[in-house]
Length: 368
Picture 1 (tube, rainbow, N blue to C red):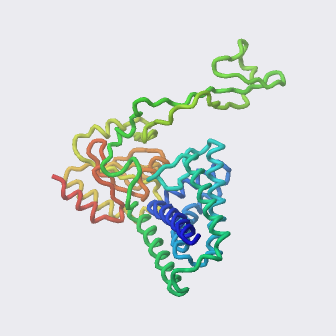
Picture 2 (picture 1 turned 45 degrees about the vertical axis):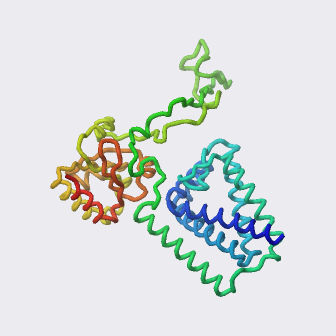
Picture 3 (picture 1 turned 90 degrees about the vertical axis):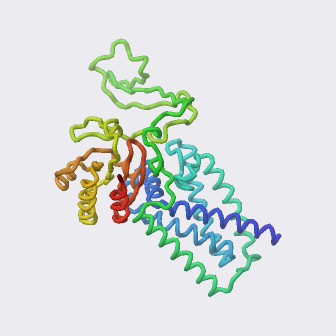
């Protein structure tokens, strides 16, 4: 029994540590996933707090995982983990049964699990945690109380410092399709053999006090302005195989709304894409941007500012080439505002946070 409990503790502890660390590598990614759930439930008011929730959740997972392994305060830790895993199981079960959320973000973007895989994992962990809860009295700490607390504090401080670092400097391990070395144009291509989901659009109209529903292929023969639109629903007719391009919504547009993605990617020489989702707190980086502009001019390097807030950007950066891009796309590509992308056609040569200005300037100066 003792050996069995030791194995259970290590399995539970390592899974929580791994889950916490892999999400701590990109806490903003977890906060965006939380916002996805909140928006589905109509809890948009909580979106402002999702980053704080993500940071605390990642911290707790890592610390609790270590606590389970060393056997510290097992009754308390087991109850806390039970509450957390019940919450996780609810989320993954909702994603699986509702079909409204494809991935749950349990292991971040680095290991994207399907809703079914996440739900199965949580049921497995729930079972193991119940075992720990029932047998907690038999488990004793491997360390004295003071030593265990010091160890957990060190783990907590290390995890917190790591999360602060990646929020400033970009994730240590970039698992996004816009990572260094990737060709964005290639990531936008649909994989061979991909079969998309097939939907039927069902419309609901009202006429003469009666509601009528019909799909796009069976409009009434007398359909005219006497029909009053009520609603439309997309009904899944046939499930596809799930294969799709890793990037499906990347588009750069001129200020007049013309798609200029292909023209930007066609540039023969290296260039800089400066992705800044919003124009808030520009005082934090506007001086550094000016230094980059000067360094780029000496190398004949063109700079393109990519933003979702083009109107304000035009005012703040009047002599800069500015293109528009969807806010969600920029948040996915650039976790820090702004992030400098050194590009060669559609390939990301490097990806650097504005905080690392010296590194940006060194990259520019190293170009021939």
